[in-house]
Each structure stands twice: as structure tokens, then as C-alpha cells.
Image 1: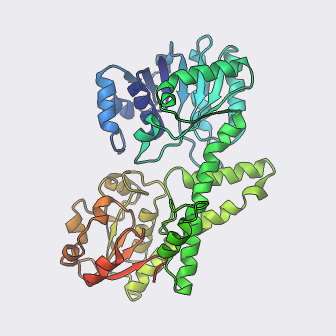
Image 2: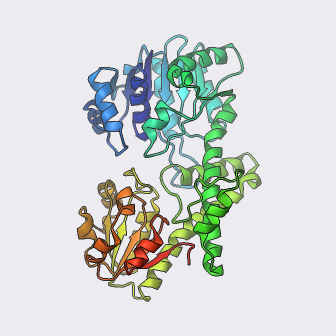
Image 3: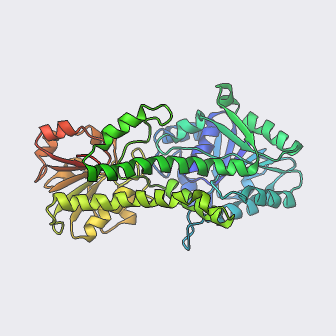
Length: 437
């Protein structure tokens, strides 16, 4: 099938390459010339495991082509809209200007019976509004909504082998036709037995923000328990193990620590609250305000803990921060807890050195006042305190004895509860972690 993908950022680039891998002929369109040049050369403009290899394969085969010209979408049977919906600078609501601009330009090139498919995370009610825009420009075209559920670090796997597919379509013959076409697009994962849910526009729009809100709530819940463990003398890791054996709760995402960040969870739960307020249902999701607050408090607590282990003498202390990305296997520093903590310590006068396997360039662009070191051992040299704030595998695999020969003081703050406390304390380290004795 001939398919177009509008917007080649994180979502769009992965989606376009994966659709080409599934056997479709895909044209991607983006307004950023540098991004298009990189993708045309088979290189992702960001770090995502396996994506460069996939891009090289599908561009060299001719399955994926890219352009800055929206006219390139002409002739495609399906058009996926994958542009960003960041938080508005003047509030918590989502900025829909990129989605609106993409659809407004796209409809000028729509052909008879073509399908426009929204994948961007949008406030409920957006799909129907855009469906009206599409219908006004091309009455025989149809809009569907197909929310994405990508995890950074696993995006290629999540696209080629999703855990579910959701179609939001009109409840008429046009919706049935759109469903049939989407079944053709996703024939390969459907053949694997991937569950498919066909529903209306509002439900499809709510699925993504509801899923992210639930995940954020689970993370903040265990971090709230960590706060209690700290004052009560408990151990949140043991607590999480104990409640995680309850099948109704489960152990996943019950690892207490520095909390969530990135370009999805924080802005999605805020936009969800803002839209609920607009609809007069703000009380229903008011709890998300506390979820957000708990998450932010973890960063403050980590700074306080660093000050504590440094004896209150933060100014002039040599602090090594391991991690700048908001999560491992990513170079994304948007709303990164690790980078935020590093910046706060620097503001208090610490001499902060940041290491990250992939995110140094992005971190430097966002926080140029910090010191960065690409060599891990050089970053650790002379440290008065080491803070593990992003749980990259190479940090989890560190040898406590070897690291101990590099630092000035064997003081470790494990912001992700990712390391073996006994291994580090046996090597003579002072080990502290959020929510643990």
C-alpha cells in the first residue's frame, strides 16, 4: 500500500520506517530540512535502539522516501499525522497548532476515498473537529484515530509488534471502510494475534492519555510510599516486592526513585487535567495534580539527600551525575529528572560533572552551564559524591571497587534503586537511596 506519514519526529520517523518494514511504500514529510536529509541518508536524528539499522534497510530498498514538500503525499491511500502536541507555553493544555497546520495543508492534496489517520496525542474532541475539516475539503475522505503507544528505547519493537491496536472511526459505512483499510495496513501484526479495538473518536483519544495517567499514578504511588518509608524507617524496595506479588497490583513500574519525565507523561497528564476542566469534569481527574506534585518532589528530595551526605557543604563539592536522559536507551532530555537535579545542585554551588552514553549533546544544549564528560572514568575522577540518576546498563554494571579507586569519597546516591546495596556497602561505600534505610 502507498502510505504517507506527516511529521518525522520521534513518533513519525519510527512509524514511517516500521510501515516500510511491513512491506508498504511510504513517503514521509517534515518541515525540517536537516531532519529530512538525515533520514534520507538512513540516519535517525535522535537515538533509538535499532532505528538506524531499520532506516538504512528501508531507505536503501526504496520502501521509504522523505521530503519537505507536502505535495509528495499525493497518491497515497492512507495518511498518518504524527506531529507533536507539546504543552502550551502559557498553560497546561496541549498545543494543537502543529496538528492543525498539518491537516490544513494535507487536505489540499487528498484524493478520492483516502483515509487520514491521526496518531498524535490530542485532547478529547480534537478528532471530531479535524474530521469536519477533512470532510469540508474532501467529502469522500475519512478521518480515523489510531493512538500510538511507543516506549522510548523500545519504539521499533512496539511498532512492529504492538500489544494492541486501537481504531477510532465514525459509526457508519465510512468508518467500516476505514477499519478495513487499517486492517490492511496492520495485516502483519494482526496476523500475529495482536488485539484490535474498534471504537469511536472520543474513546480512541482518551485511551492514550488514560494509559499514561494510570502509569504516572502507579509510579507516583510507589514514590509516595517511599516518602513514608523514609520517615518511618521502612524499605520501599521490600514494600514494592511485597505488594507486587498481589496479582491485582503487579510488580512492574513499582520501582521507587526519581520519578518520570520525558515528552509524554508529564505533559499528557497536565493536558488531560486541562481538558477535563474545559469539559466541566475536572474533579474526576483532580488527583493527577497530586501525582504530578509527588513526581516533582522526588527531585527536591534528591537534592536534599545530596546536601545531607555532603554534610551540608554543597558549595564547591565535586558531584558526578550519572545520566542526563530522562530514561535509559534514549537521548531525550525533555523534562529530565536527572538533568533537573544536576542543574539544581549547580545552582547551589556544586561543581557538577554529567555523564551520559547518548544524551550529552542534547543536555549541553539545554543546560550549557553544567560540565560534561564523555569518558565515564574521567567523569568519576575526584568525585565527592556520585549520583546515579538514569539507570543505563553500563551504570548498573559498574564495579564498586574500581569506581572506588577513582573518586575522592565513596559516597553513592542511587536515585533509581538500580544497584545492589550490599555490593556497594561491602566495597566501603556510603550507599543512600530514596525510600530506603
